[in-house]
Length: 141
Image 1 (tube, rainbow, N blue to C red):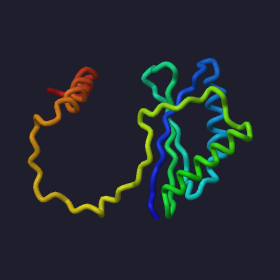
Image 2 (cartoon, one colour; image 1 turned 180 degrees about the vertical axis):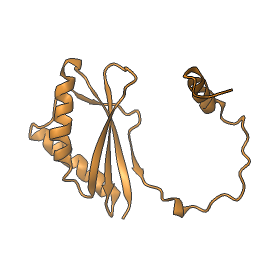
Image 3 (cartoon, one colour; image 1 turned 135 degrees about the vertical axis):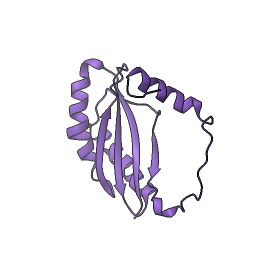
Image 4 (cartoon, rainbow, N blue to C red; image 1 turned 120 degrees about the horizontal axis):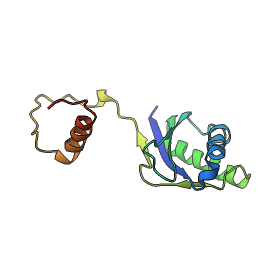
């Protein structure tokens, strides 16, 4: 069975209702959606960078014969909850980081025979990581 995740970034549009938003998400929204085909679990994360409004990420995990059908079923349940008046009114989605993801098993790929990549190819990725770790004293020159 394919395994996959649906990644849903959200924000609470009213900072005064952040606690209510989290209570609703944890104790109403996720249980409502947990009835979706192949649903395994939902795990939520909070952006602790200090972004305002507060940003959250929910990763819905699935193990279903047809991931597209499972994702559609989850959306159908969300729509039903909306019409049943079980959907909070201070929720907004951010498309940053959103997506449907299928698990890749390492056994599907043959290992590389030789590794000799240039150390100058990714300065836009490695440079900021090095700078941050050096600033924190966690990387020696």
